[in-house]
Image (cartoon, rainbow, N blue to C red):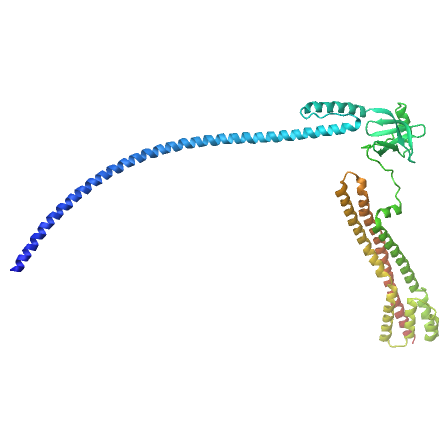
Length: 434
């Protein structure tokens, strides 16, 4: 019974609690639904406001972009104007420098002729006008034939007073009671007589305003630079221009020639008489070995010594006699080849010394260029002479020595072949008779 009552109580309590829970959930659902509607309205309002703000921001961005493009265009225009202004400034500076250079050069060029012009830095057009005006007057004066009193130097160095007939600014003639003729610059606006005797007629004709039949004239570029008289070249002057190396090459060439002559004498004495082989064979066949050795005893030379060795051992067997002949010829080769190596060595060393002189001369030339520049060719002539003449001397010595040395070597080889052929011929003929 108690259990039934407890079960009824639990069931009634459960039904009552379920109804209240449903009511609580219904209230909560209604509240949440109201909150949802309110939030949806709030979201819609925010979306509308954000859409409006985005549209306003896009409009503002477009406005700012337009302003940026306008500023960039203006900046580019200003940059172009600045670049053009810089170019104009550089052009003005270049033109100013060029004008200053022209003015300075013009003033310095007119100064030696006694024309002094003051440079006005604030008024270059006026200065340029003065320069061009005076230059035209001077050009007209210098391009005409004019006669001035002055002096010039003779060949012996003495001065001679007379008339100077100037043909523009490129030639000058001198006329005096003692001597007349064309003049050449002697340096510092001084002149000296030229070595052409025919120019005297031209000078006298010009002095009397007569047109000469032939114009014997010496044209110069600058009256301030001395023109040296042409020197006659000799063998010694050429060698001297090559310096110490040139004399060494010449000395080697002389030694080489002496060696060539000595070698010719050696080879000539080695061959002996051309009839000696036939005389030896005839004596050997007619008189025998002893008489033939007596005949050959006073004979000298490589050919005679080979024949003596052949006749002395002619009774031996064939192989032995051939070895003796070969050994004898080898022994004589040292005498036949005497001085051959020395001649060829000199022929090889001479052009190398010429090359050494060339390098030395070029170094000297570049040293002079470094110190004095290239304005005066006379300063460079010494180094260039060494550079060129030493090579020339080296080849002059080497080519004949090389050619003659090889020819003498060929002669020596032909002598060796002739000695071998003669000795074997004598052996063969003697064996036929015996």
